[in-house]
Amino acid sequence: MGVYAEHVLPRVINVSCGSKELDPLRAKVCGGLVEEVVEIGFGSGLNVPFYPTAVTRVAAVDPAGVGWRLAADRLARSAVPVERAGLDGAALPFPDHSFDTAVSTWTLCTIPDVGAALAELRRVLRPGGALHFLEHGLAPDEQVRVWQRRLEPLQKRLFGGCHLTRPVASTLADAGFAVTSLESFYQKGVPRFGGAFSLGVATSS
Image 1 (cartoon, rainbow, N blue to C red):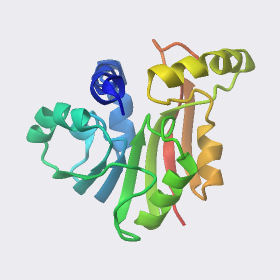
Image 2 (cartoon, rainbow, N blue to C red):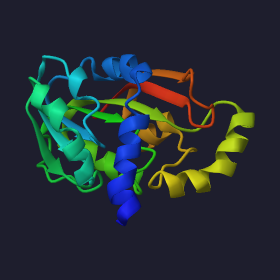
Image 3 (spheres, rainbow, N blue to C red):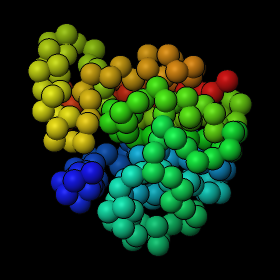
Image 4 (spheres, rainbow, N blue to C red):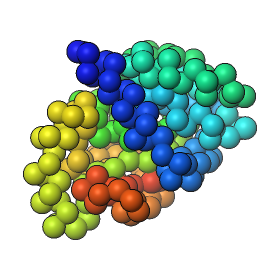
């Protein structure tokens, strides 16, 4: 992975995505998670304080060992047991229909084969299981999309392959999920090219 990707980038993401202004969004996306949960893109565990009491266990999937170490204090304070259970969202090491719900926050933008990762989530979710998602992606306004296309090559180099132009809702639909709730908005305080957020729930058949 290289020194920057393995050791520096997880710390950058821990700070940039750990803003208190994002806490209400994390609380909202984690609301409704129940029982057995798989979280792809676990990172440094920034969602851990927002797991509801209905969650009985979380399987954390993320390639970054540094992120897992940064999560130590959050994990120590968590009433929900969390285990590091996988490294690659596109190859989940779980049997079919293992989980009741799943959560992904600012992760689908970065996974190289997002279609494979979503297929894996559908496989490991029980029928009717819900994926709770909070992502950034393709903006609704063409003038913002112009800048997204211009800046995406630099964004990918600096942030571990992060795309600016992935259309969140249609990507989920193309993977066979039914998007049952969706809020699309520009996040205050974030440049619009990176602040076109989608928050919602998608169910697996």
